[in-house]
Length: 287
Length: 158
Image 1 (tube, each protein chain N blue to C red):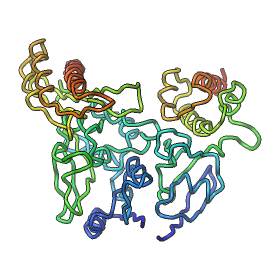
Image 2: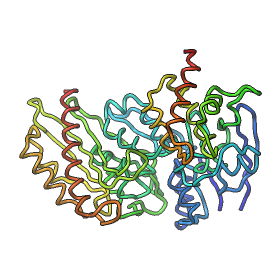
Image 3: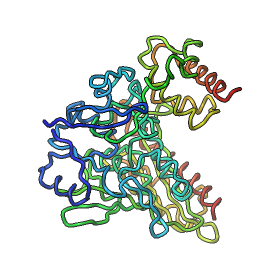
Image 4: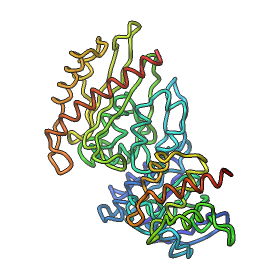
C-alpha cells in the first residue's frame, strides 16, 4: 500500500482514475481506517486529500456557505454562521460519533461512506445542499440526494471525488431541524431519522419545505409528498397527519435486532413530525 | 511498501519516526517512539483508550495514520505532568480513586484536559457527553466525573 498526499484536485482525480478502483480517499479517516483494519478493504493507494487548497475551510459564497471536504464536525459546530443559518445540518453533523470522532469526521465522508443511516445526509438533503465533484472532466455540481445509490455505493464516476458541500443562502423565516432515534443516549447509529427544512411566507404559512428520511431504506430519501402535505399550512393537525402518512409511505426499511421494519416506519413518521415542529418554531423565531 | 519519514511535534518536542503507510499514529507512538501511554482498546474509534490531541482537537490515534501527522502538534498523556508534578487531573484521579485497571485512564485524562481548557467549569452533563467516547468498564463513571469536577475546581483556584 502507498500513502499519497496530492496538492491539487487534478492530481487526486488522476490517481483515482489510474488506480482502477484500488485507491481510497482519506479525509477524516473515521470510516476508512476502520474498514482498512477490519480487512474490509485492501486499497493499493490511500489518497490523503487534506493538502488541497481550501479543503479544510468554511467560506461564504453567494449568501450561503461552502464547506470543504476536510472540515471536521467539530469545526463546523464552532462556526457561528453555520449554526445560525443551518442549525439542523450542524446538529445532525454533531451527532456523529464521540468527541474524538467529531475532531476528525467530515460531512463529505459521511456522505461518501454511503450508509443509509448517515446522520448528516438527511439534513444536507433537506437543506438542498449541493456537492462540488472534481473529476477527469473538471468540476461539476450535484444535488446531495443524487449521490447515495445503495448501502456503501455512490453515483461518483471513475476518477471523481467530492471536494466540498455548498449550503445555499436562505431567507428570513426559514429554519431546519434533524432528529434521530437511537436506543442509547449517544454514540450510536440511527435506527430511523428525519430532517425537515421549512421556509415561511409573510403570513407565517409554510411557503416551501424539504423533508428527508434516513435509515428507513437502502439510501437516504427525499420525500416530496411529505413536504407537499405541509406547504400552505401552519402545521395544524391535519397537515401533520398527512406529513406522517407521507413519511410512512416512503419507508422501506430492513427488519433487524435494532428495530423491526414496522417500528422504523412508525418512528420515522414521529421524528418527521417532531422535526417539523422544531423547524417551524425556529423559522418563526427568525422571521 | 515504502516507509514514510515523518517529522512532527509531540508534547512540545520535535520528534521523527519512520512508519509504514498503513501504520496508525497509535502504533507509531507506542512502537516507534516508546510512548506507551495511549492504549489500544478496540482499534475502531469506539473506546477512546488511544485518545491524543492533534492540532488542538481530540482524536482516536487508532483512526489516524502515522503519515498524517507530518508537521502536526501532538499531545499525549506523557506530556501532562510537568517533571514530577502531576497535572491536577492526574492527582484528582489518584486521590479520588477514579481509576482501576487503568487502560482507559490515559485517554480519559487527555480528553478531560482538553475539555477543561475549553470549559473550565463544566456541568456533570457536559463532562458525561464530552467523555462519551471513552469507555471505562472498571471504575464506573461517577468517580471519574467527580474527579474531573474536583480537578476543575482546583484549576479554577476555587
